[in-house]
Image (tube, rainbow, N blue to C red; front, side, top):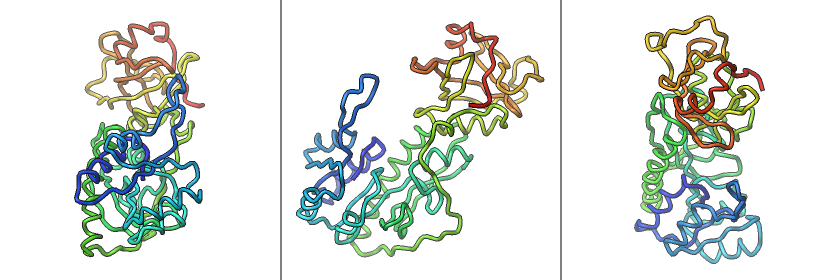
Length: 313
């Protein structure tokens, strides 16, 4: 069971393993992109390419869907980046439903664990497999594997790394369940934290924060949905940045207030003053426009050289 590209390595690993994938469940097709063309999910498309039977139910409690699932008679359900499952679904497989989660539970329970781990400046995260229960991401842990987060790594880059690591861990978990070598361990509430769905206000950059926090926010929401700010009446999305050290900053007005340009140059690029320190903007765009490097943006948007980013929504 899965929907986005994050689940593809797990789907492909299962399809190529000794375990038999008897069916795939994904989200229904929905409008996407500027043209709002109705598109199937990444998981549905890949599953069909692999010759697997797919269902995309609108409602998971639909009697017809539940009947189909019972007829499959699965030993276990592998769940990767899917929606909340009702008890009628997660309790149906004989050995339970195994969820792959992109954090070291009980930290960052919820819909956006990768984003919030980077946002909060974590240097380490990982993947967890656990048995689903009635509450979100609270079931007994089966296996975990950790990995480091790079100082400039974006959510997209970390997500790709964790999706591959998670696929390996999922197969390891299924092997252990089949062989009877795994003992589920109840989750502790000590150190538990939440990773809720992202809201538009979470993405807005407050330039009066220290530069490391601004940099973490930019990379936490890159490439999508993208951290954003207001500049001269325009909405600007920022995708990549770099913390400037005091020795790397070109001559500028150190008294500039947060959100003002430290430099705006078609060769050196762009840098913005923060509450403490300054950040170089490496990749950004006006809303709805293509991404540009700092120098490209400076060349094409000279009208914005004398403007200042706003620090409140």
